[in-house]
Image 1 (cartoon, helix red, strand yellow):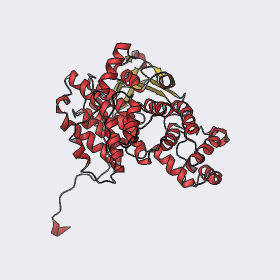
Image 2 (cartoon, rainbow, N blue to C red):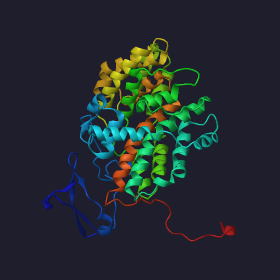
Image 3 (spheres, one colour):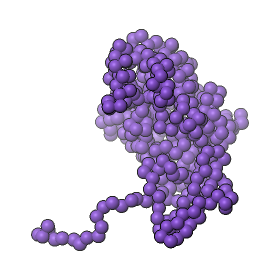
Image 4 (cartoon, rainbow, N blue to C red):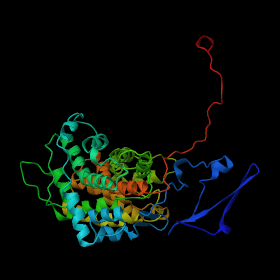
Length: 433
């Protein structure tokens, strides 16, 4: 980050006091006004609900330009990473800032692979949950409990312990997620297999059973790997900000990631692809699509089409372009004729890409639209959609947490408020109220 020349300082005058604020510039993107001295000098602070106009940190991990439809991880476009790389290679990039050389890649993949097993006593932890517990409830509890099973890597001031905890989280999250899925089905847990890739191993742990051999289709495994890459990090969103603000208090990394999972659980964040499937169920049949598209266009109708447009991307979601190809490959492999929801989804996609209303308002299908369809086609229930999001996003959370811990200017998160309650008043005894 660099400071612009003093001629570009912003002047604020309040109650007769004057303050000049620096304008800071990053390597790309809009400049920011540094308001850190605003309260100490003028006794006022900014009001920004949702922090939509506030930069909460300095980061070198992910860059988004929503107007142009750009998503970069450490400078690399997301489509190049999704089409040319693997999830663990992207994970290394996010954590370390550069793509790995061959020895570095081998060492990292080996370290993750041989950390995938979880403490055997965690099985007892799972059995404490109700059989019908939501998998995300299990994820929050189990990940938060990891610090009790691995206390040797909770010292955030020790670089080696941070490295170990980071790798443990990335390695064990798929195992924990698959165990949550198996628990909900009443099926035995599957141990990870070290001869499989990250995506293949996750599919194996979710779908294999002891009674028969599970064959992993390369198209399905490739689609899963792409889903993980496309969801690995997305700048300072709600869950990432939650991880950072939790970590700013000095909380251990397992607790911070559990906090991120809890934030992701919200339907406005990680539940978007689940909402897509619920919407398709509400539409019901292909012949009713026109009716619901009409409802979506009606400003007075509360009905919303989920999976179209994006809060950040005002252009085409760059992740959706990659996911669309995988989606059609998976559906061609598995077929959609026996699943009315997938038929509805494909017809809805055609309309959205050709209808003037959608084009004019830039309501393109987004990554949640396609990922929801793929995951349903693979056989995952909608309760598991956000869990898979958490599996992918753990890498980004860990990278962001590590960056925050080593940032010399980071402080404990402490937002201000605009108080609108009662002013000071005297206590009234009970008999006089």
